[in-house]
Length: 464
Image (tube, rainbow, N blue to C red; front, top):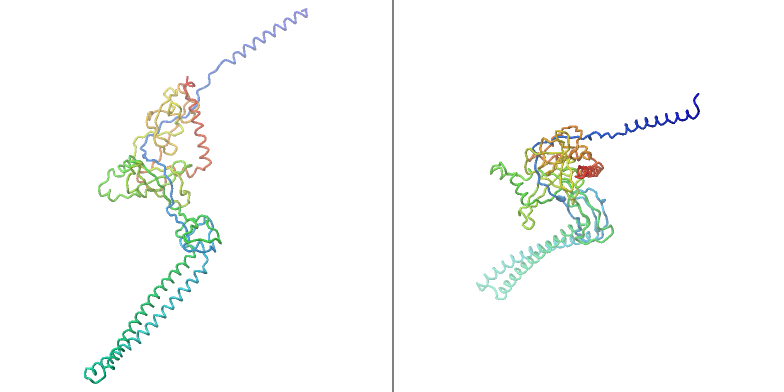
């Protein structure tokens, strides 16, 4: 029979064996297992012919803008519009007190009537004087004939001469009175026309069609002739003014005249040059128009720039006057351009780069230079071969020198506008229309975050 002490010692031994076995098992399960290579999405660049653009900043300007001003003095009796209302040319906007101008019209009409009456009196006097001249001439001829025959006295002859001269003087006086009456009539007519004009000006009309601002002078206040009352702005269509450098101007000229005959150059129309516009919060250039004017004085020698103006249809008034905008004008084509989504491009203190995956699925860094942007695609000017696989998704997980698990995708070519495309819409218009402003803001905030992550992943300290 085993003693109690022996049993206890056996229990402790078994416990120790179990502890060792368990410890061995735990140590085997905690051995380091390297993580699998990170998953990334890669694609080869798109190679295609792209349209080259001149891109500059500009400012929008209303095609028509007119100040509404009073043309007569008086108290403002009525205001017949609401601020921001669309008005038509000729609409009555204000009514100025009219009593004074109605009285002036009445006085002018009375003066005209009096002048016309004076003309009638003068005409009657002329007729009477003309009859008297005829009669006195006959009497003078009779008396002269008698006087020559010594058949009448000298006093009778002299009386006939005096009567003839008096009749002629009376006729001249009547004619002068008629001339004065005619002048008075013309003056009265002019005064009446001015009175009618002044009365018409008491109703202040819209000089152009467009949207009207708030009134600058309230009802019941006195306005002077020339007082600024409001402003009307027509925003459809709308101008965009911008300038390009002298070199860009030469590029534009050469691109437009290349391959043309002298006769075609003579018939060249500015409106054939398309122009694309983007606002501050727009993605790309969703507004399409055409060139409207080139400064006829040529390049400004002080600034070395050439002023241009484009015109855009603006039926929904999404373009406001005074906006600072981005302008893009096609000037040529670049063949075999290499394009990538802009999200694949990263930047750090060293420069601009992309991450590529070689044939062994190992990440490598490529220093690049970029060119023009086309929507979410950007031209890679130098530093990248068209056959290389570039990391698109998972840039933050890829580190130069480390392997990755790559999934290949295919990129679609960018839709390019033709050099002489009609101004319907730029390539980015559809995307810009479909994207809400909230989505644009979110994308703008997310893009820097992804680039910062890529920069952190590609730093030399991390790669080592």
